[in-house]
Image (cartoon, rainbow, N blue to C red):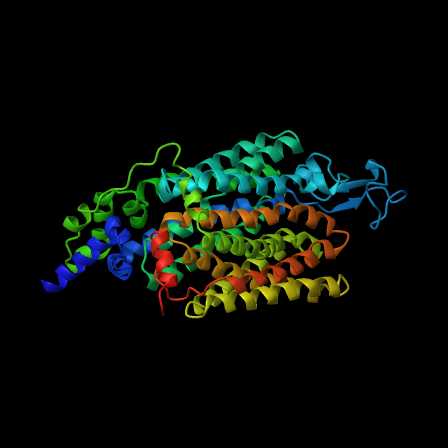
Length: 512
């Protein structure tokens, strides 16, 4: 009984904001949540899988343009005016033809073979612009009114519905507008999945659930070559339909079975729901009655329409948080540009586009394994080593050129593997840098920075068809330069998550 009473007292301290503001012991608060979420059984594993599945569909929409927006191969039909090395923009239209159906990609269907790099890269660039705007307008709602679960389901469902509607596009401009909307709605999926997963487990399992998310994203990415290959003689529209309908079904299932973050519920004053969830996780197994202590905590005031974006103000009113955000956003631009840019640039390798994507996707698996073994390693050195390795391989791709295609493909794969590993550790690092009250917002802001860098990637990739420096060279330089910001960031390995900005500040200023 004495042990049970001690745990209950710790729980009471964790949710009593008034006592915490008056100088309560934050370590007891950490201990309460760690004990409440301490076990990881079958039910918790199923929740982890169900939440992470959203990344499967997120990956498909992120990289589907590899096939739908591809520049198809062609062949001569009249060798008197055409040769395999000809520029099709300088020869009669009647002297050449596309390999496969004319509606295979948007480039062939709408006659964009001689369009500028801007027009060819516009759809995917609009996708990233939509991601940028959506992250700003939607993500903070997951910290305030909607919560992690509702925001995740809304984003996944709206993304999927828009992905079906896009098949009615009649030109590249309407198509680009729909790509913008798809990017807008999918912008918060990755953020909500990562935050929801890590807030529902203790520190011991934080890295493990993150790897499950990465694994689902990898499977989604790897599914694209199979879907595209099956539909290689069909319209680009078939790829959107095949990826959208399962995502809609998933959204309905997730709405029924996924549970909300207990940390977020407590921050919103919804103690009864948090009690039920904590009991369902492990408190009942431990014989701890959390009800009486949790209900004594005064609920925070409900957010008004003017307070929905208050987490941004809370974040930037402190100088240390502002400096940290700037540093982590710059780092995100570099890592994200290679992580998303390399798969989109596989068409520039001069290699079979189906095998190239399969090889790229296969690199995600050893990356997940490497990330798992990096759990007990320091975050900053891990990110630095893999980011620099990725940048060096990118630059070497330019130096090798197309003369040694096998070597170039190998370097590109190593670069992508390194970028994947750095990106995986980087996402966990973001979660550990900021408290619950602003965690979804900060994670989203960093993802905005990642997306901002990728807005220019489609144009660089299009220009890279003529000169590798504009794609691989720029990618390598940017990711290596961004690592300088690691010097101003703290190490977070093994530290418990904080719930408020005051807790975070006190923890970092307390003597070790």
